[in-house]
Image 1 (cartoon, rainbow, N blue to C red):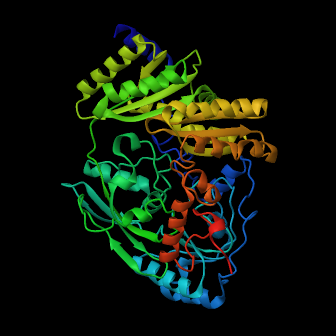
Image 2 (image 1 turned 90 degrees about the horizontal axis):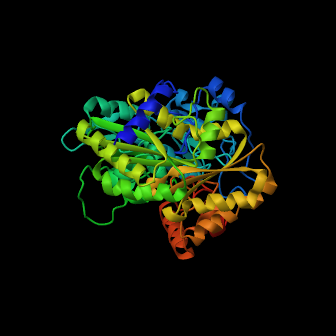
Image 3 (image 1 turned 120 degrees about the vertical axis):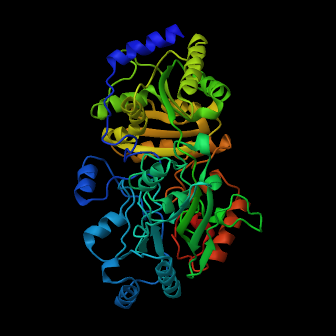
Length: 535
């Protein structure tokens, strides 16, 4: 214990506890369905610093069965929503048409902002009758082109539906509308003594309806599981305008098919989620964060195994990043300093524990860290001594995507893989690309989610050809998933067969055809274009 404590004291004297960003753990650039502020000045200021290109329509044809918008349609929508909620302004449409990476850009001429489920129902019923394609949109924080139009689809943004409907302190069940911003729900629950089971770097912009529709993962999945487990019910509107009331608040309900799961992760392709009921855990008083160094990836794996055994019920996050990731953060993020100076190590692990007994939890964590250091799993480390230092540790991990964007062009891959093989892909990609690119690996080690990023000075088709389909083929051979938490969207719709069998995809297509026979909901996304015939 003395060795660990001595190391910690040394580091505390040399490392500033000042928070790196204005708000702890609300970095707007993250690998969890992330966005920037959608204000005009912020958007243009940010995007003027990044490299971009458009991929939207290169290999896709507009479905000729879809109608084109006309003045009668616009007048009808104004009659339902009111004139101010029918947006035709070019500047507003620019933001709604473009994803934050400026990788995908549609050409929609209309943005609708319904305020109630009934309004969503009336809009969809009309669009279905006219065969007007639509794209559901929340915070527009996706990374795979799922929340922006491909062509001229009508954008239905649910951001005006942002009411908390009810909260039960006994059960911890929150019921709210789909347009509630995640950070606002976090603040609401904090005042009630509870927390959201979902925590994303994009929480200042993303909305709960979009989180549910993409089955967003995030930083707390290792503790609280996915939204398939914490979402108790939803309300959704089908393509024909029918409203499905599945807004249950019961933890046990075994009456027939549990249809809500069809909408969790279907990215708005089966219906638009309008309300959500979600189980929220109590806020616990004891939180500890440690930033650790490991000599190799094998040590990171063994440390995870030991953390699950030794920390057990208090382990709430287990994140890892390689030295390339930390180097990027140090070189491209203002104010970032190495938590473990002066050396650079091969790998870093961030561990968070959450419990109800501060002295017991800290003692348990320190005993685990001492044991791990004596066993050679940890080369160095520090425990945060206050909320500012804890935030600075988290902001290093969450700031890596921002650093990547500032470094130049970036190819991003969000993969689920067996933990023991996860970093092999990073090493093989480095061998394959040589000096033509930097390959960075980091992510949620606690749930086997690798964020593989390839950084280059500018986009290059020759480099892309070396990355794809190799990265998908490699993942498929390991029986991994080509989308761990970002979804498929437009980017990976045609890549689904790397993770799902033809029979499985065909059944998905049958469900899509049953629930949306005209195919108006978020077309060209999620499912491969080859299984749809346009006539």
